[in-house]
Length: 153
Image (cartoon, helix red, strand yellow):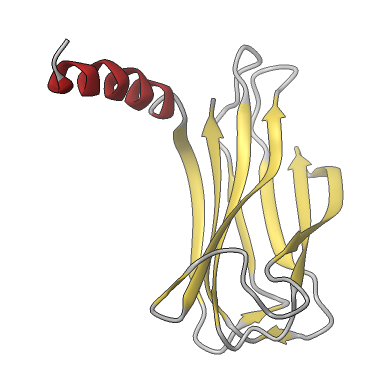
């Protein structure tokens, strides 16, 4: 087997595996002075089918001005005007010495976290998903953008 054939034999299944996750809805925001506590990422999902699995992901871009080693988020899921779940999620951004867990590119650190995994719906239905920063500052400096997505697995 030639090197080219070996590469193709490995690359094609890998691409097929990663392409199985498709983004079906998203909410994005850019922040100039930081993430204000009133700013939420939210969207109404398309109809989720019981036969499928879904994943809710959050991407956040930090600058060097971010003053904390972690971040808390308030996560909400609503169905037909009633909350099904309201929870707090916590993620680490750096260690005690200030070393960022994600590499820097141009002074920015891009993080991707799975907020909820293997979501299912009992019946075909739409859901409202939302995420807000839940820290002790009303405006959280050092965050330049955030994106919330739901993917079908």
